[in-house]
Length: 378
Image (tube, rainbow, N blue to C red; front, side, top):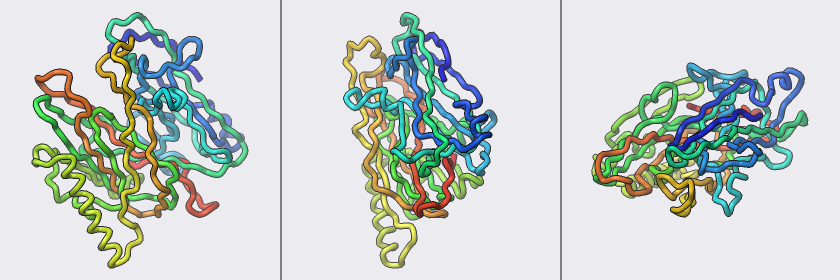
């Protein structure tokens, strides 16, 4: 599937597209099973050659059976699902394949069983300098699928919303003054709704203001997060987000730093582990995954497409061990935010859109057990 042409002129201009029935799977679903074994999304030029970032930033591409105008609604499995997605931080460094990383394939014999027709939606940005010569490009979407039953893989996604979202989105604003180094901690706690095992985990954020992100198999109370004065918070109890609790802390205002906040969380985690060892527990408190820090590619400053910064965020999956979890097990996402680069000017402040998302690809813990093909808590 290819949509376009779009014409960019730089300056981070926006190009938006969407359509119903991604992959034309609706008719296929009516006549048999559909197992997707690979997918890819990317901006391309008129000759179908991939365009990386720069010059075209992939803000997001979502293919979903549950994200609709007006807000999420459960699909036929009763879950909110974003089956396939890519963002600008999924492109690899050139030495690791560059735009090749925008094509994803499950291991041989594994696949995701699609259950419902899906909607495609995306935003692209021309990140060349403003008033650049016209650039013509397209949005390309590809799938590899089969009728043959595969070993099932599901995709979990959860986003941290530390206060009421803006509109129907899970972005939020953080303020970063130029006069000093501003630091925040954001977090969210919820519980799993199924038994399964994560076999691959990864993250999405707005990297230039994110130092690290952790997922811990413990709740906010065990980690003492509510004991730190909150700058904002949000609590929900939705069918697809049971007991969702979130908040954020202005660390700088509390005379704390990212380093001291990390130390505090790990100290509380140690206490939770000792309590678990002494009294027994079914959900062992542990850090299950941290974001890989080696996630930057530095472009030469004389690059024709270099605008605000020579640092570009790139995909580098963390190496996290398999995680078996059960229905009702609680987990907490914690993100630490501070500027990765110095501000471009000395005066004023930047309001930054922020996004904290944890992903996990999962398989049944017990062979043959049911798992939803995808589900999200937000």
